[in-house]
Length: 441
Image (tube, rainbow, N blue to C red):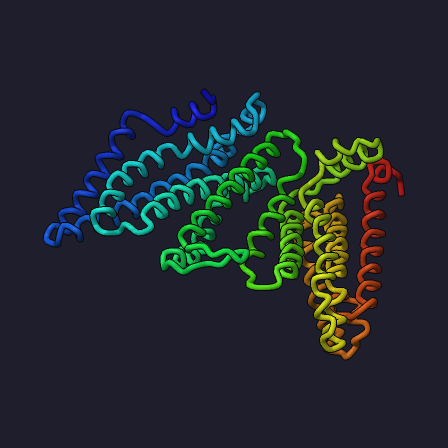
């Protein structure tokens, strides 16, 4: 048996805990039954089903999710995480051992709740979509467990105080975000996805299954990163592609144009997200450069961070956008020029921003490179174009913010931005080499 799974079971279960939870649930259901005893049998069944559903959510979604996150955070707080990292366990074994073992007590209580909730819902007449609700609740539990574990693993990788606090806020944000789709699914509104009609409950469960698989894979790959087991960087661009295909399916018409634009937007968002959340130390890029110089492409890819993969994927989406948006070039000249070159200009600006982020990350004196980078982005993308526009300097505003320019001017301005950023990055790279730092002034 998986050693980590065994260890988590030993931590979660004891004779006392095994007996106390069923007794507490029995008392709770008895209280609900007595409160509704004056009503009809169907009303009593509905009350018991509702209580079982609420307790299932509390035990599986709440307590189980916190336990999954704590399986990583407690190791860091107790200073035993380094022992875990030095173990001989493979990332997948460590991942499912923690996911299944740390949440086992919550699933134990959730299973007891379902033993009351399912018969109660059946007897209470809540039969439509009962299987969808049960399956959706189970999938949502696995999704939340894997998501919080993946987030906490990334926080542990970044280190610092935020890693010790953990990512429990993710649990609240996901529940708030999912409230709308869940209520729509319960209302039974039909959904058209890629010109195929779906009933809302079926689509909700299928979508939840897809995102659950994505989060489990994310937790596994995050565990591999934290255990220093190098893997080819296919997970991040694959998530971008699947997310693009999923979101584009809701478009009623012009799927090619929507696919291109959504893909470009998804790759842009994921590139910036990975760039800001993933450490970019110079030694990491030193290893990448050395392996490229030695023609060891596979070894270089194993060292590569996530953001270059979605940045590279953004370029074909930008080219596809040019062809997909071609019919709109018949619009008025200003609008047509703005649309025509914006996708490629956007990719060039992303390259510029990534180079500037590395410029700050490679600094030996900067303590908060992310804050410095975000401040510069606020100036470049907002303050400078606004000031130039307020002063009536339209030409300079287009150069400062190429996305506001039209036609070839946007491409030329964006290319100049890239060259300047790469020049700064090259200077910082040479200045931060050990021999350059040790050279007397």
